[in-house]
Length: 283
Ligand code: AMP
Image (cartoon, rainbow, N blue to C red):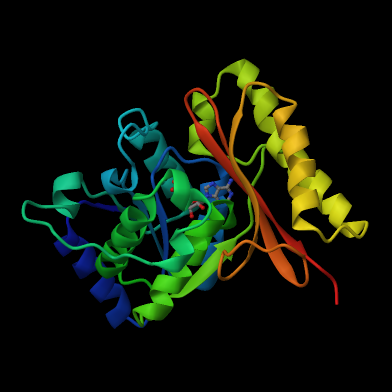
């Protein structure tokens, strides 16, 4: 497996692959990998001949007071996971390579970044869209895989790719969960043991919401209150938001008519967890 640090080396690698007529599949990550990341890599391999994975803890997507410094990192373990999955290239730039002195460009996606995480993390998605655009330009992928766990991020990236005419297929991958239902996340490591029980309430709430919807409930407000009751019964988490939104515009919806997403964010002492489920109304 190639481990590349500079954008020039990454370009050379990508150009060689493209010249040989092979497809590049790309999985960008912040590292500290788990089975959720691995599932994205397997999906990318099904859609491409050559797999590139990046690890870059991107400072510009962390707000002031957020966990950039304490974000978990373990390059040795990550690179051995990526190699075992059979990736062809690990792109591992450092901050000065991505944002050299004089750097001054931002990619900003407007409307779909306003709701949900946009309220409590107002600068986050500019950081994400900018770094993903830069990574796309470095890696030159034909397709890239993003997890539905970060539902808003997936919508933002799809919007950016459409709006900027990027010739890249964006593939959404299902949420991978622990056996107890908690959505896998690198940040779960920062949960105190007694917070894990409270963290399980997110997926329990989403399951209860799905059952209620299947039993005929169509009011977003009723489904939100159902989820709020289950999560707030656990005292250790502080709810940031529970919302039901259109899956494309991410605007709040009041009545479930077709397809919507319930998205949840909860603050714990040292981690803010997000989770979601897509609610499909039959017919
Ligand atoms: P991160 O390293 O947290 O930025 O995540 C890198 C990619 O993995 C993103 O596309 C995430 O949506 C995806 N991802 C993270 N956790 C999960 C999960 N539990 N299931 C599926 N995809 C995930």
